[in-house]
Length: 122
Image (cartoon, rainbow, N blue to C red):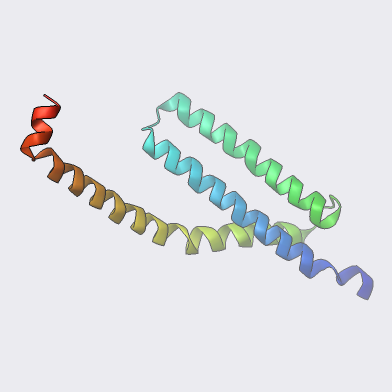
């Protein structure tokens, strides 16, 4: 029994990393969807891309970490990585991007009020 449980920690760590990568893939597609003001067809394409990408990441990590064997601790590791990344990375990143967006908006509004900008882009 000892030999069967020796490598489980490394498999769990690999799958936590895979879950975090899946969460980052989701965040990238969500930001792209928000940036492009996606309609129903672009949303469908983003959802299909997420599903295919998440399956590829999960299967790739599973093959790399545990020779393709699906075990409960590998699934738990992937879910843990997704939850850690979604709970820890997304809220601060969203706040930072909101602040940066407001800064850029303020800069563009300030530039728009300059007379020489109005003359150039008339």
